[in-house]
Amino acid sequence: MNMLEVDGVGHTYQGKDGAYTAIDGLSFTVGMGELVCVVGPSGCGKSTLLRSIAGLLRPSRGTVSLHGNRVDGVPSDLSVVFQDYSRSLFPWLSVTRNVEFPLRRLSRSERSTRAGEALDAVGLGGAGKKYPWQLSGGMQQRVAIARALAYRPALLLMDEPFASVDAQTRFELEDLLLRVRREQDTTVLLVTHDIDESVYLGDRVLVLSKSPACVVADLDVPLGSSRDQITTRASEQFVELRARVAGMLQGGPVTVR
Amino acid sequence: MPASLIGLAGFFAVWEVASRTDLVPEYYLPPPSVVLPKLVSLLGDPEFVRAAVATFAATVLALVIATLVAVPAGLILGSVPPVRRAVMTLVEFLRPIPSVALIPLALLTFGTGPDTKVALAVYGAVWPILFNTMYALDEVDPLHVETARAFGSGRVAVLARVALPSAAPFVLTGVRLSFAIALGVVISTELFSGGTVGLGQVVQVASGGGLNMDTVLAGTVLAGLIGFGANAGLEWSHRKLFAWNLPRGGDK
View 1: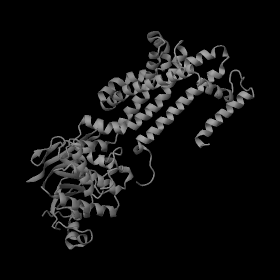
View 2 (view 1 turned 180 degrees about the vertical axis):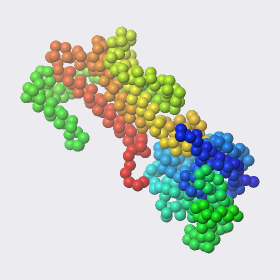
View 3 (view 1 turned 90 degrees about the vertical axis):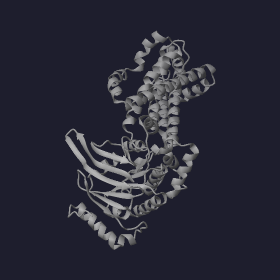
């Protein structure tokens, strides 16, 4: 069964100086337990797509379904991790309270158990009493990931989650994501503009065209489930895949599998 | 001496010199070396203390009422655009009217009791809190709102769990600005309210005939000290409560 079905989704913003179509006729699916990366040129409407899936925006055309239910408003079992962790975490709440934020329907003890587990999973077990602004950027993004996981979402949406951290931290967080989704069997849709990242993380890579974005290619990434920053990235398969994605992003010959 | 007190000390020094050198006649402007001991001795006088406490209590009461009125009103004006459009002209008309200009009307309507000064002080103190609350809502980070919405928060939950905490430091700044306004209005009203208990009335009575200028100035200095202390206290609580809102250096 597909966790996510996006069918013919398009969105046109009505502005003062005319209409602007950000995405058009996007269709794809994400299977249960899959990690799918969406990669596209900057400004191609990736965020519009993500906001449509999250129910934060009602697309002008098409439908989005989450485990068979049509998305019409914000779904109750979906988490989002945004790029800008410093603005997505609430500075007036401690790390633990931030992670507990989405869990207010649970009892107090259940909340604190879940938050503790989620913080342990991202390696921040001891930082619960701190405030987000007392942590480094990478650690803040770990908190945001912990918050998303604590909610136990059917689908985890990530909007360029590692674009604002330094390269070293990015590698750490990528491996953290791979480990956590393996442990918790989470379905993930991750939007990025980084070709290497999309290939390194994804079970599949969806390549989008320039705005108005549509799906140019849907590539399988047969790199297996255990990946390594050094050997995987050096492997022939990886290099070949990243070249194909790069070629398609530059508008080269399109070879759909 | 802490650097923060240099200005204050300088002010008292200039005042002392102006008075001693007869730049200003000493019987109008007794020097601080007379006024401050007078203030100390007045603080031993139950009547004077009662007046000071009455003034302070009226100010605090007015501030509490103003906050209870202005914060919900600011939340509504800041988050429901149609209400804002409908009400803002009225607000902009009422706001520039100085509370002190309403003293005669209020005295005739409510009499010279404490209700009058509290009501007028509320009127004066409401605006900074209202505006700070309202504009703080405009400044709420859209990504905070988006995050809360993505985790299933509805309109009211976003207001209570995101907008209100974001706005809180600005609300407290509004309260801080309003304290001085409320204190000023309370004392001004007391000046005109014969028979009322309060610092303003003490000053008013003592000034008759110009013979007790030391008491007049002692009352005035005490008003300044009350304002100074309240401001320092509110600033301190701002730092304690809203550490997250303080400017931070570094790359954290």
